[in-house]
Image (cartoon, rainbow, N blue to C red; front, side, top):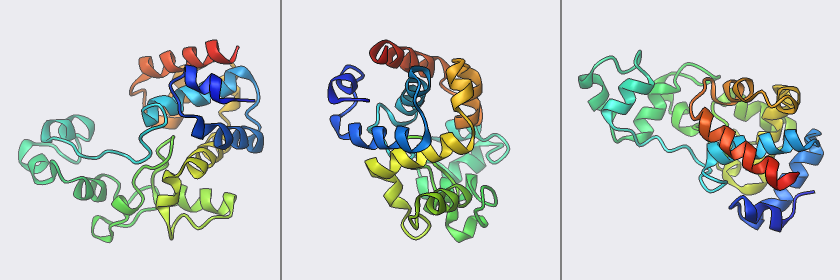
Length: 198
């Protein structure tokens, strides 16, 4: 069981003790490696459990680097730079269960929670599994309880216990992130959590 003292050593607020313990119990995340990997990945994704909503306030050059197909040149990128709502509606349009750019789904279902759950499909299915209508109120995912539980749902539906037990950092990161962005920082957070939970 996690406690406030262990979380304090990881620079995580005691407010997360109950949400994390409930999530680990509900989704069968029991071994040290599983819990440490979960906490380490979440720490990276959420700035040590402090940022529960995706920051999409990007400059033009960053947009071109992250989404080169959507922003192939500076002129196109400048149309969106510094406008998080417009960026979300563009980059998340017509995928992950979202409708087109004009629907506003990209912004409505932008990343929230400790794993930055993104897209109508994820939000809908997580809500079904947890018995909460997140489609109607996606901001609930940015509360500690549901930030943790939706991450647990994602973890469980993507069978992450096995690669976590083997400390397969790359596989877990690719499933959570879609790539390997921040891999070194994720590994650092997991190793810190392993030391505290040992």
